[in-house]
Length: 115
Image 1: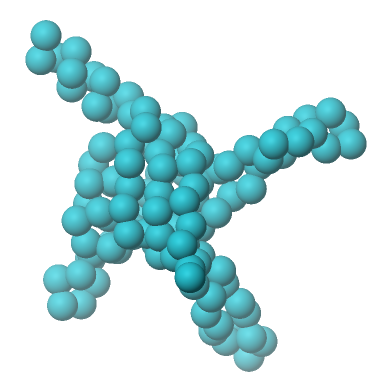
Image 2: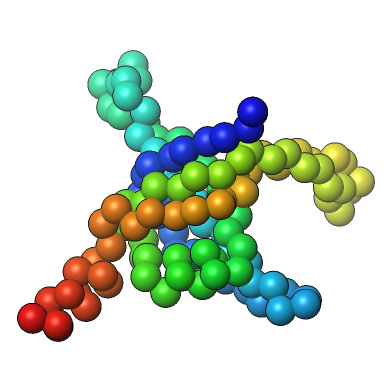
């Protein structure tokens, strides 16, 4: 079974693009802190590349920005490609099936406007 659930902060603005056949894609990187300190007494983070498609991609780009906490559920996928020097490169990424907005300042701002 290939299921993954991650909770972390958006490390950079989502990269959104419209592709052929009306497909929409967004690439996000989620910073997830490790639960232990390194030799210097600091918590490090892992940065996980995630790919979102269509409505999930649009909603995430609309409602989330750098620093917002989100939870994603999906599957891990690996793929390869050849770079300019004909070297094989490997990419591991999460193909996102759902996103939960844990804390987004845009949503909070909209709720404040409604009051």
